[in-house]
Length: 136
Image 1: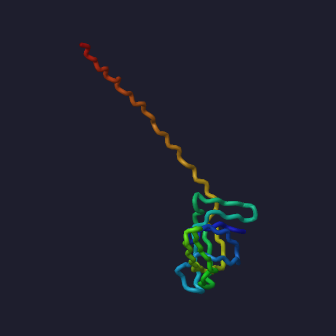
Image 2: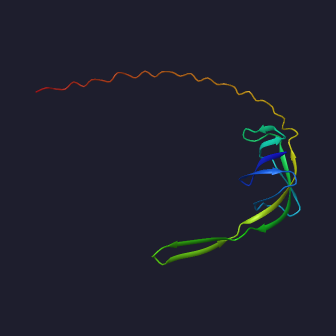
Image 3: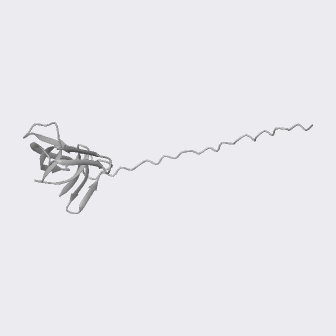
């Protein structure tokens, strides 16, 4: 069983007991977090797609640790101009362990969309006025 969940503005495909790295979350190490923006679940071929999210579905994760990612070198150069700039960046990350994918109340309820009909009224334009030209 897997699910696609939106965590901190990014979408992740998660499974039970999987470790993932996400952007830094405001949670203490060892605490549990619930994510309710579940976009899709798949239980051995039975796919449930949300519109845009599945109501009642929830992902439970445990914060393992907070860390920094690998250094990324940003090097800018304009040839023959004597311009070189070198910067580095390390992203703050949170390591999560997925504990449970819960879709108990996420049974596929079919919502029938009500069709709204709009009356289109034709707007009749007034005829253009003819301007008489004066002849000398």
